[in-house]
Image (cartoon, rainbow, N blue to C red):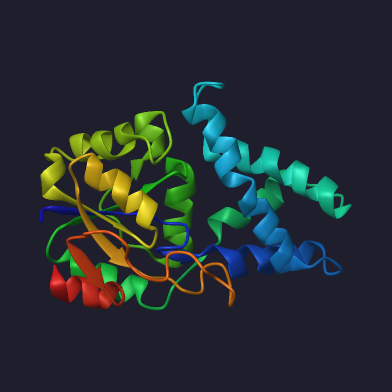
Length: 223
């Protein structure tokens, strides 16, 4: 493989407890994990309006802030600085295996995030967590959101590679299915604590993925 591209939220970083930490600092009286879950729960509906053609492409940073307003209202909370709290999504801690695994994998191939997050968000998140990307691809360069095929295909194109030379890495089976249908190779790494102790989805691979790895260090060994 000449390049590995990565889902980020959930696969590379622990968004749930990281966002909850930032929420708790602003609203100590609020159920911070519940707030984080509710905020993330607005993620797919907001993007689907764009994927379906009901709205032109806007960066995820904008969608996150719009979604934040909805969640604040639901929790009966008020925030004096929406932009500051919205930057919680740029302060997500990597899972422990991610940075060493990426560094090992980078010796073998190009590595880049293929996220629905914006380029700016991914750059600041990389600086926060020490993620050693070679490039940033994903939604911003395609002007659309995963799992639309254009996101995977455009990501391979800007790296100067054919889809079959690129492996999509994700903890989400639906992401890998879409990438596989677009002609990319696939690698599954489970993150059973992404949604907390009661997680029921994506605990095991459910497709014919090219690689199934225990973690990113194992992924680098198998690459």
